[in-house]
Length: 59
Image 1 (spheres, one colour):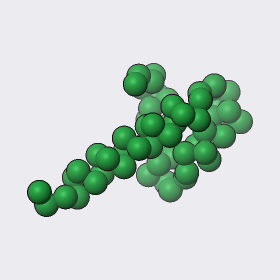
Image 2: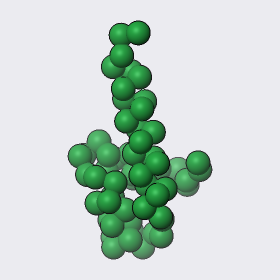
Image 3: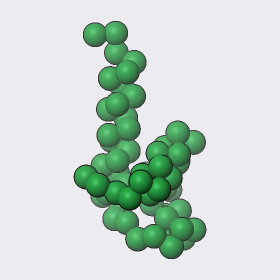
């Protein structure tokens, strides 16, 4: 999945700030005048969760 770098960074920032995928998606629609699907944002959030879990795993 590809997203422009600035969009990716904003979504990752939302994730690290504790926003849900839906809250992040709404922020893009309301505050950033950027149209994304909720599915796109959710998939990125899942990827962030996977990478966080992989870093935390001792195996």
